[in-house]
Amino acid sequence: MSSAIETANSALSTAVILAIAIPCAVVGVGLIICISICIYCACCRKPKTTPGMILQPQAPQVQPDVYSTPPNTV
Image 1: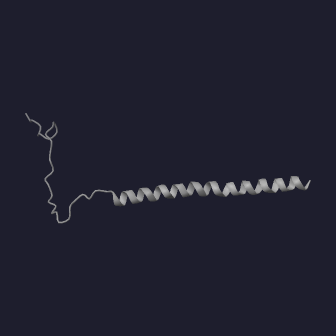
Image 2: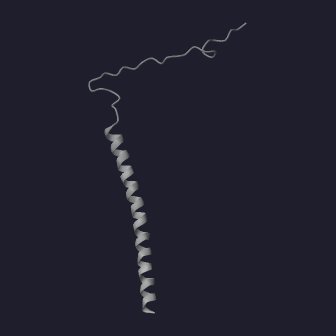
Image 3: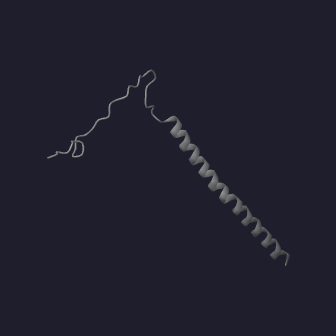
């Protein structure tokens, strides 16, 4: 009978170990993915301007269409 109790105790401890290890592994993989994405976004992004570049506002370009011409009044 002592053999049955030892088997139950070892099965319970294995289940507890798995219940702790599996979520930790999932969280660890998630953290590695998040950190990798953050490093990629911070380091590999191309700058929108070059240093010393002077930005000048441009006039908006209006496309001619039906609504941009005034209506003909009779």
